Structure formats: C-alpha cells, structure tokens
Length: 315
Image (cartoon, rainbow, N blue to C red; front, side, top):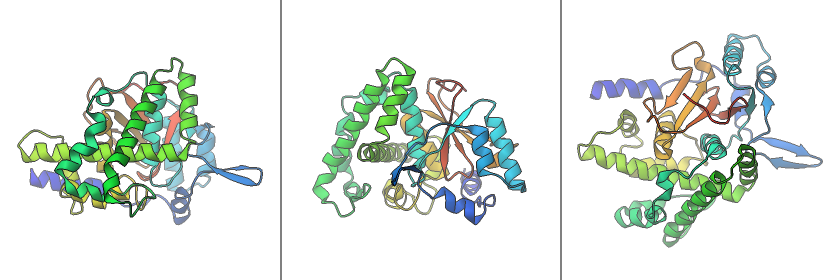
C-alpha cells in the first residue's frame, strides 16, 4: 500500500507547469475587472462569452501549447457553448464550484438539513483546541473566543443562501440570485470560509476513520501523506488557512471539496487534451446520486466554468 501510495502521490504533486509562459501565468493571477466609466468593479463571475471566441482571444499564437489549448476548447465547445471567467484570487476553485452548485440547486442537500449542522464549530472546538488558530480572510489576529460564533455565522449563511436559491422554481431565477450573491463580497467570502471549515471537518472524520481501521477513499491517504499535512492540524495550518491568502486548492484538495459537498466535480483539463485525464472526476468513483458540476482549467491552478447547453450536467 505504501509503495502504491507514494507513486500516486508523486503523480499528483510533481507535475510542473510547462505549458504556459510567464505572461500567461501572470495574467491568470489578475483579478477580473469590468470598467464602468471611470470606475472599476471587480467581478467574481464574468458574463457569458462564446467559448471559441474566448479561446481565440486568449490563445492567439501558433505554438504547440496554443494548438493544444485550441483543440481542448474545441472539444469542450461540443458540450458547452459559453464560458464564464472566474476571478483569480486563490478562491477560484471554491468560487467556481459553489457558483455552479447553487445555480443548479433544486433542493437543500441532506447534510445541510441536519439539526446539528450549525453546532459543528462548538463541537469540534471542544475536541480540538488547535482549531482556535483558524484564520478567516482579512481577520488575522482575531480574538480566540470569537472563532466559534464566527464560523457558526458562516454556516448559517451558507444554509440560508442554499435554501433560498434552491426554492426558486425557474432556472433563470436561480441564475439571477447567484449573480446577486456573488456581487456581495462580504457574503461571498463568508461562504468560502464555511466551505473551508466543512472541508476541515471532513478531513478530521477521514483521518479518524483511517486511524480506527475503517475504510477511507484513496485520496484521504494522499491528503495525509504530504509532509505539510500529516494530520488535520497541519492541513489546517499549512493548506486550508492559506486558501484565499497565499494559495488555492491543490489537486488532492479538489477531492476533499467534492467529498465534503457530496458533489461530483467534473473538470475539463485542457492541457491534458488527448489523454485519459482530459476529463477528470473528483472523486473518480462518485456516488450515483451525487449532483455534478463542471469546471474548466488550463493548468490545474485557475478554474473557469463552461455553460450554455444544459442546466445540469449528467455524466
């Protein structure tokens, strides 16, 4: 098991970004900006754009990399007519996934219906004192005693927004509600903190299950095989606390996000075009009843969302 685990871990963690030049990598770090007169408004999710027009605009050259990307976009365009660019501030994986999930939501997920859902922060803090070192966005140096109530507010907001949007009957109404939600920066980032905390809870459950001899998904072994996250405390300090600050989600954390939401995250990985990994599923053995959201990436760092042919993706 250890040999296989090491090989799979190396596969996920050792790939270098050999596909994009410095200009492309710098561009992906820029925030989406929409100029309105003399003022600028940061967009979390840009308006729809024809996916092939977007491709031509982004990849004008004739290099091998550009040709690869064009073929990838052309393949995606057979399923989706448009693309929406996601703001690239190290929250893009969470932002893209949550936007897609909410815009397709027709019911409140069972895990959000639990009566104990909002008691989760208090429950975990009573067992794990190190969770007091949780660091939400722009709140470094917060008083220790505030963390439980703060995270509880995030969870309440997540359930409220998901419930309100899922109760809208028409798809266009859900879309409009999401548009408004993702223009409210304070609420938007609060939702990401809720997701990050739920990911930590899932990681703790998986870690304990493995230690107690219960069966866990393979990605859980990978998650805790890293020198920087050999246990949930290290995962929080070195990875989850950094999301939105100095880094985004790594590959193995995409599995954790999917497992936490109980959604299948289907990703078109354009630089993997013509390989078996062009369309990757997180997790790769999803439950049949899990809803599906679809993302698109050029480099496993920045994620956008393809839209336009159907309201809900089916595997």
